[in-house]
Image (tube, rainbow, N blue to C red; front, top):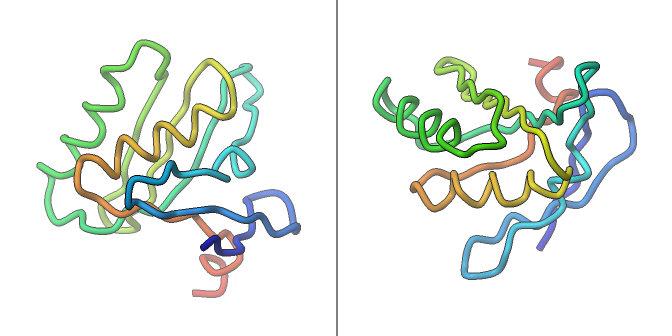
Length: 116
């Protein structure tokens, strides 16, 4: 079912349903942050990225959407940052899009990242 994660700025855990079997992804809106510019930002980890072609496929698919301001995937950390204008719940749809491209997405856990 869901798994507890810790957001970037908050020490409260959130439940994220990361099932891909036809069930919609949910809970990612709890990890979305409002930027000072008024857009939303979501950081996630993407598994299955093996080359620059994978990065291009993910970034260009997201960037082709009209409300996306930016999509950047770091190859070495597998961390994807997505910025958009619109509702925070859009984060669930954007994660689902990356899943449909054949990649597994999971929440970015800031605490685990700092402990490494």
